[in-house]
Image 1 (tube, protein in one colour):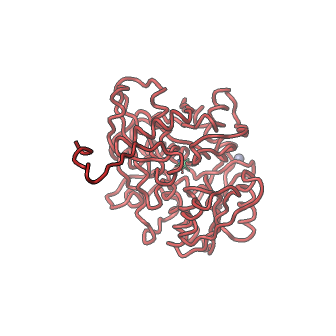
Image 2: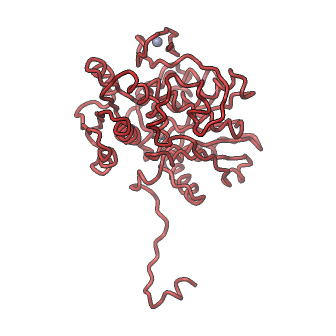
Image 3: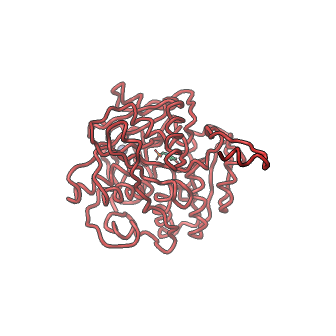
Length: 376
Ligand SMILES: *Cc1c(COP(=O)(O)O)cnc(C)c1O
Ligand SMILES: [Zn+2]
């Protein structure tokens, strides 16, 4: 097992969470070949840093790639990777499952995470499934409604009073001291789990562009590493261009990228409807910036209005996603991609998680006696 810091290059031969320089480490690149198997875990067996504990899988991954009509007016071939059908309705389950496999094998009895949304629900659910205890650290302002979807699985939900940004780093330090394994947003095993998205896409087609809603940067790094490993294994000819998509109201990566900076800065007063991608100081921000530069990729930000419009458009195709997950489609409209390009947008999480703020359709009323007229 070898981990490397993508920013300073230092290597580690034990599973540390972050580099001494403060950046998050990642596993060295894997090479392999695909096998025949029921799940993505089995088909890409060579590419995981720990043996997936298949007996505790909840069926995460192996999600559909849906051809979309929304690309037609823009002249591109658009496909939607529907991650909303994962066991807790977001892609986070892929990373949680793999990181939990590591925690179990390494002998941890308790895991933790810092999240108020999809990741919290995912870790709470999988901890119960794996027979581990979970400590879920949430922000002070988290609504009771949101916390229900987390605590129902049995994880211990703890409201932490204080600076939520610092909590990420404090949790890793205190977790190490107490033997609690924290599976935060860019935990190296979590990132490896996200590679499955790239593997599954490549089983069907090689896209020219992939649109990725980006907050901490864990998802972006995972998909990037997945495609790079396929390329280095000789399984695809080219690595697609990856587009990091952020909300204008919280876009620390796009801001640093457009200003040509090598390091992100804290985004002051974040405000967006896309709460799942509103990390003002993303822990993998510098690692993502480095990838964007190295590969000549892009960062695009979109307004709340554009997000809500894209959410509506997706719903009219039958896919109800949360605002964060509609950002890819919102970005596509602004990008002017070449005619005929093959584009995949990652639909990261379900709209049922964020009913508040959704622009609903029209509701009609009809007296039973007048039903014929109403159906006319
Ligand atoms: C977590 C999340 C993201 C962003 O993933 P990061 O790894 O934090 O960049 C995007 N959309 C949804 C719905 C999420 O839950
Ligand atoms: Zn480093």
